[in-house]
Image (cartoon, rainbow, N blue to C red):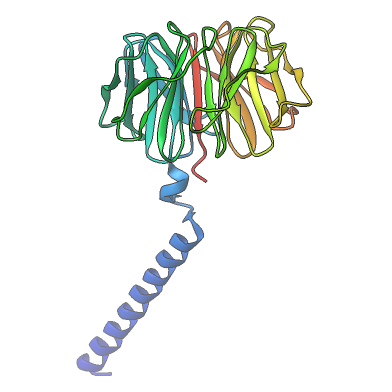
Amino acid sequence: MNETSRGSRGGRRQALILAAAVAAIALLAACGGGSSGLSGAQASAHVYWANNNTIGRANLNGTGAIRRFISVRRARMVAVTSRYIYWASDNNTIGRANLNGTGVNQRFITGASGPVGVAVNSRYVYWANNSTGTIGRANLDGTGVNERFITGANVPDGVAVNSRYVYWANNHTIGRADLDGTGVNQRFITGASGPSGLAVSSHYIYWANEYTNRIGRANLDGTGIDQRFITGADSPDALAIDSKRVYWANFGSGTIGRANLNGTGVNQRFLITHSHPGAVAVASGR
């Protein structure tokens, strides 16, 4: 075989190898990743929590904990979307950062009054003004702030929102209103004991009973109330869900607890925070 033929054949072989590699990369991208890493959507799958002046982050399986992921001023509760993480601070502001921890804005929304819970949907940011008994709301870009979007709450704490309603935790009840702020019911669910964090799935509403160390659950229409849905928590101060599990912040023991959405598989020490977490949020990447 002459040198020209060998070179031509080698070039064809390299071209075939390159084409196969390109095809493999395309297949991996279509399938959502490969052995070497995660797709962009999956990479956002994390648990976040607030502890004093930091926000921590870990993988959904509890590994890779970064306990000083974002430095903040006394974050109360946190919420996440596919792009951002939001938190309520005791300096009467709502902060925001990118999910990767960059672009931190400690004063994204100002003028709140003792904000605690924070929630986000596709259009608005909501927060509980603990000091004034109101629920605030603003556009996703931080404009159009209304600190009295909903009034008459009783030292509101956690906030949650779905496609129809906004919910909040009062001192011993769960309140609910339509997304436009009408139809306010401050006693939508009764019998809670120091409810704090709230979360809503397609079928249920969950809350943390801080005073009795239990996680409560009810149907979305307010029936089927179970104040002892999950027991054994330690001063649970916040709550979040993804498509499979419910998470809560055990302020007393410095852990993040986790269970299946049906209440089984309870693990009160799923994640050790080495702090006293007062917030938890989850971005499932799905």
